[in-house]
Image (cartoon, rainbow, N blue to C red):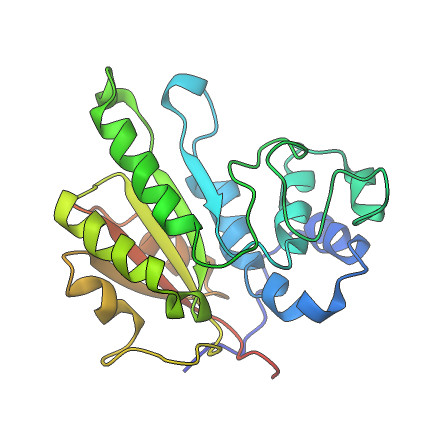
Length: 230
């Protein structure tokens, strides 16, 4: 069952920053479901420097990016004052993140089903590039409902065939998918050769272990969070 627990180890500064992002309340559930995962990724997992060996993070679940913006501001990638003007005329922060306007954003996203295919191509390109041994990992975050998109099914299969061991996918499960998958979300990846782990969004240590679990091919972490609308 999805978690209904509230994480207690999120910093107060992060929560204050999140409260400053207003004006897109219809996507609050989508935004808040990603907060714990994003914080653990950016504070404990992602290697952002040096440029030559850094990890890449792609937010495929780009609708409702309030938590993403709050995390980027808290770690100093964007100014905190930007959070007070979401989607204003001169604001770089839109209802969907724009890689041309927001530092630290790898892809412009929001239209569902794009992030994982892009991540597969990026991971494949890094694996084939000169000096690939020093390349970082490619992390991509999706929502469970996003897996209803056929483009993701093709990307899951291709990543498994290519055994992309630098590809790390996170699926935030807030029980909002329409179609589902026999055996659950993780099984959808495992049948294509992915390794899989589960974690509760509120347990940051377990989440960290799942996100960093060693793998010889692509890896998915399914993160249980509060059910949408609960």
